Length: 309
Image (tube, rainbow, N blue to C red; front, side, top):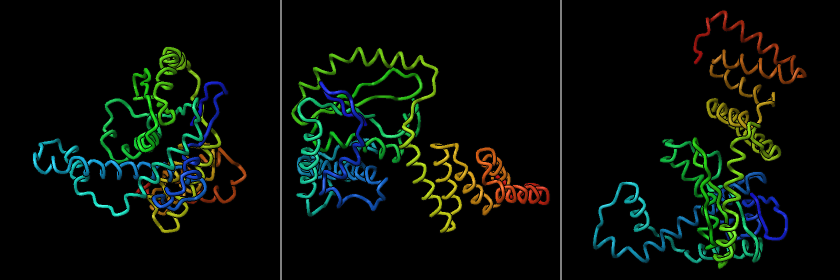
């Protein structure tokens, strides 16, 4: 995440971690998390509180109208309306306490001349016409950053970027009550932003990534894979190891661990491929891994690759 000030140079900030540290009432809604997961847990909790507060306020303002008129709505909208009308929570004050704490925290961060710049949707951009946009998983990613401004009442402007393959946009957030300041700055910089997007799209260089963040995330995924492996959840372990590899595909350990999970499922060809890849990446682990790879080859020759998928 980027915190951009009008006078000072831009600076990076982990907005999830900042919220976790500066909105104490939010802890009630945060899932148990390691130090690395605290930021993600806070953003997820923000989206949860946002939805709960929306349901409460919708019910308070529109329940009588819904029950009287009984409007015919689409399936998705009617489901949301029903959730709101049936909403029941005793301690509403805690939701408003979180909103107020978040507003103060962002005001302290942004002051009067700060603008927070972040992707509109967390994670990788969504491909155009993708069916994933209908999934609950995509909604979870979308709400993580949307909730920052929506819950706090901060003003937000979203700018779509020119991209033929993906839905890409940036969101600009300023402190509560700074609407004119934000709009003025967006109007002044809009053409420059679009020019930079066009220039970037013409570059053929590899995308720039935050290596430290990727390494931390991949290690976290590896640990989740190890936990699943210990519980004999082989398929789940493979999924976690594969995600770790997608973030850091030069770590031989991830391939070793996934190979072990493949072996437990009898998927020998995949295990062999992972062993070979790990050997190419790190010769220091050659002893045990060579034995594994050789054993797999023997099994494949003996069984003709059966149970492989």
